[in-house]
Structure formats: C-alpha cells, structure tokens
Image (cartoon, rainbow, N blue to C red; front, side):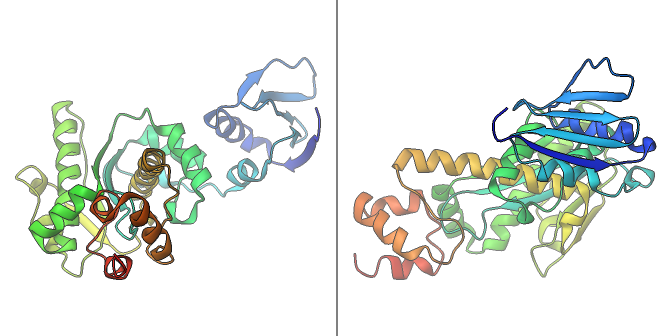
Length: 299
C-alpha cells in the first residue's frame, strides 16, 4: 500500500467492545484473522486495516488520515444513558448566512440512537468542518425520527415581509418541526418525554406561543448553548447536513460559488447580480439583511 501510515493506540481490555462498536458504526467491516494474538481485525471503507491485539495495542495501517477515528476512540465514556430519557431536540442552521436557506430540524433521540451517535462523536455542529458534517450526516441519514423544514431564500424573504420579525419566523419553523415530530411519534405510539430547543429569543414564550394543541401538551425546555443536550446536538448536525446539500444544489444551479456567513459576501453578491441580475438575488439571498443595500448600491 503506497504512502502507508501506521499508528498504534493502547487500550484496556474492558474497552475492546466499545472500540469495535465505534469502528463498525463508522462503516469498518470485521474480517477473519487466524492469529492467536489478535482480538479482532477490521477494514475501513477506504481499505485501511485496524488490528486489536489482546495486549491492548490497536494498530492502524493504511494511506488515510486516522486522526478523526482515533479521536473518537479516545473520547472518555460518559454514562449519559444512566440519566437519559427519549426526547426531541430542535436546532436551526442558516439564519446567519446571507446566501442559502434556513433549515430547522427536530430530532427524537431514542436510547439506541443515543448509543449510535455517541460512538460517532456527535456534538455542536458549529465546531465541525463541512467534511465531518457530511460524513456524520451520511451515517444517520436513514434514521426515521428527524423532521425538517427547509425555507429557501425566496420563501424566507416572503415570510420576512409577512411576519416583519425574524424571531417570529424562526419560532414558527421551530413549532412546525416540533408538531411534525410529535404527531408522527403519537401515531406510532412512541413516548416522548419532553422537547429541548436552543434558545434564540429573549422571550421564552416565543416558541411555546406558536405551538399547536399537541405541542402545548409537552414540557418545553430551552436554554442557551442548547447543543450540550444530545438531541439538540443531533438536530444541529442533521440541519447542517441538509443545509450543505441544499447549498451544493444552489451552487450547481447557478454555476456560482456562494460564500457562507454574512461577512465578506458583498463582492460575491455584486458579482452574482452582475451576472444574473438583481431580480434573481431574492432567490439565493436573505435580502432583509443590511448587506443587500450595499450590494445593490451600484445597480
């Protein structure tokens, strides 16, 4: 194998099953190994090998970068399941981006899914690179208990005019995905303990006021830095995964590389308008941002 890397990491025998489970959830496949010194052997989707020896040494061999997987394996075990109760978490992505959609997701986390995302290393999506988000999202894309709302820029701009308040718009989207989730869970007779959201408004009643009769039956917990709750963290990762998919579609449609965020976008926005015309800007950008005035100053 060309450019082969070899890394050795040491573990206690009590950790062997967790190591194996973590590698398998990252799509590594177990292989036979006839050595009496080998506890198990696995192969990654890219052809690398991981061999766990009974001595406690885990040896990685291959041409790929093992940094992320080793980091996942070395994370200290937290007994979240000891206090965990299945619940919904809600988060959004895109509200601060000039270009692209607003994506809001609610995610119901079961005890089984909790174990899965812990092994994958889920956390606050803002701390992850786009590449890692895409990888994590692809690992859980088939999970049936997340519910999304994708508000494209055109719809966002129309809602901004209608509601005249970005926080109200966001609250309505939060309530929408919460109600969708609770309705689905009730129809399947699945019990949800409560709902957690990452607080985005000074008014704690902002979301609860928008909930329907079903949502009002459930306890709503909200606080800043909500991603510390595993269900909110899951919603955050999934929302950003969906956002990146929509982002790529928009880039492909216009054959244009849209920048993320709200700073350093003016020159790109001016270039877009010069190529596609100012009437097309509301289809790709949140024109309620103050940025728009400067973008259109020369047109």
